[in-house]
Length: 78
Image 1: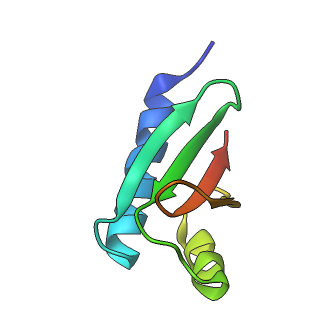
Image 2: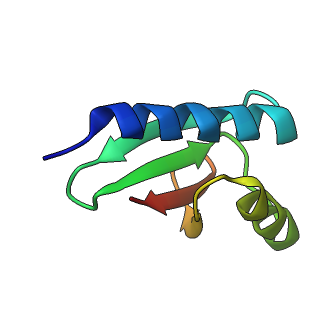
Image 3: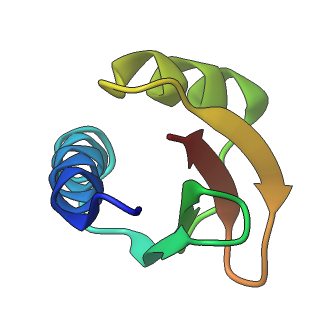
């Protein structure tokens, strides 16, 4: 059974970190049921150092997921 309350709290925490570090640049932040993960795509493409720095700021482990249609993507496995 999927705990959507926990997913929504994690999404709020992710949004807070992105807005604090980069400003409002979230293109998509959604739960991917197939992957059992939250997927984040930004509107900007970050350099390797910035990706690493941002990953360290998140309250849950984040993995770099490449570049999507709009910008850098991250995945948060729950």
